[in-house]
Image (spheres, helix red, strand yellow):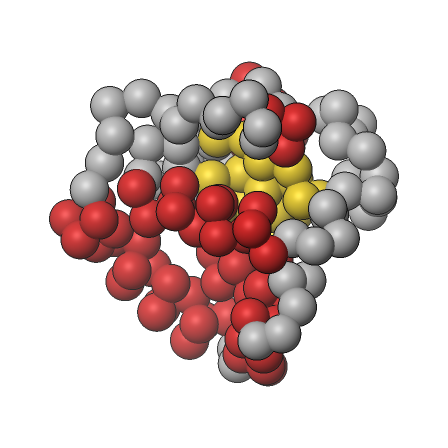
Amino acid sequence: MNFGVPTNKKLILFDGVCNLCNSSVLYVIKRDKRNLFLFAPLQSEVGKQIIEKFNIDTNKVDSIILYNPEKDTINYKSKAALKVASQLGFPTNILSIFLIIPSFISNWVYDFIARNRYKWYGKKEACMIPTPELRSKFLD
């Protein structure tokens, strides 16, 4: 089951009401020169389906999930963010060096930022609505 994601793409699920997450999505879109990524809020139908299929506890993972339809696998938290960064070209791809750090360490940093993201960056009342130019990058 690929949830409508072509096998040559990867789907980034993000917290649609988080200002930091929305800014990060726009950052990725701007630097995704190979047109590799599609996006959907965790709160969307496809987000809910992936959460259910992979039995994800949204109390523990609530900000980024990277779905690979070719392998039917997910990554989340720091590993997802770093795998996305690795595909964005120089200088952002340099961040992938942090993939060598054990997940329990990199996820501690990730979780610290995730816990404070609403306090530091704010929260929207509803999910971001993409502009018509960006609409093709988003799944419902």
